[in-house]
Length: 199
Image 1: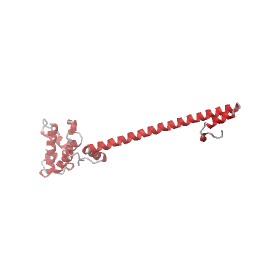
Image 2: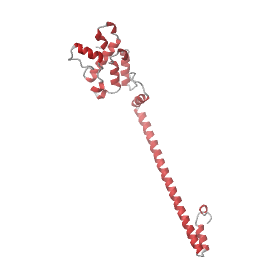
Image 3: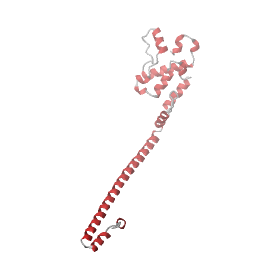
Image 4: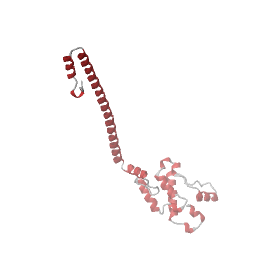
């Protein structure tokens, strides 16, 4: 029985009472128990529990019900009538949205929530896009690593060339100091023209 029926005011019996009853039925069908445990309570205590206590969340009874289905049931079982679905059709529409992996009306449609729903509906597309993104990132990382290696090898080659040029300069100087100018000139010709400098 919906909490507003407990006061005995017939004007409070609206379609929202039916929404509450459908929520109770759905909760019991999915969890095997009632949303409020009132079976062994005296009538006065049961009325107090139904009027003021929040119903159990379906996800606390069965973890598999957490998420959108729990939210739909929770909205149908709201103690405050104005917070329930406006009609059984609204409840049914949200259940259809849940079954179709669409965003439900009972939950604020944040970007993250909508993106997750889209991903569940289009798993192949999302998997393909994710795989492509991973491949691009892997290619970018490999290019960055290879670029770093190429720079290191270029720097090492420059250092080796400089050492060779210095060695040839020193060798030419030794030959020049010993009076072998022709051999010193031949030694200097082995140095590439751009690296000869003033030698």
